[in-house]
Image (tube, rainbow, N blue to C red; front, side, top):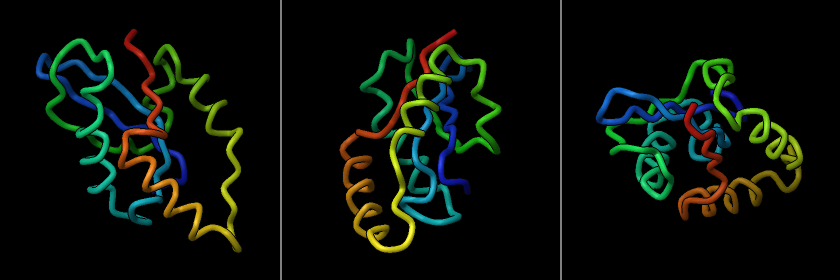
Length: 110
């Protein structure tokens, strides 16, 4: 899993919506917790239908055609990840925010 990921949410209608968020916060390689977290909080966004599943995309490329993709990329690129000293505290703080529905950037619907 990458540090920054796209998550595809599949709706009951079969349509997809995308989010960008941090990728290695809950677990370095297993996306299961992140997918559950996004699925839990995505109902708070205007998706247009009921979300039925969430899956971390193989790359950001999968979401690049969504309306707010570049805004999300710019927003996350402004946040420095403190690798080394300070990383564990950043990771705990970011995990806490994500579990409260923050740090999830909805890319809109095309």
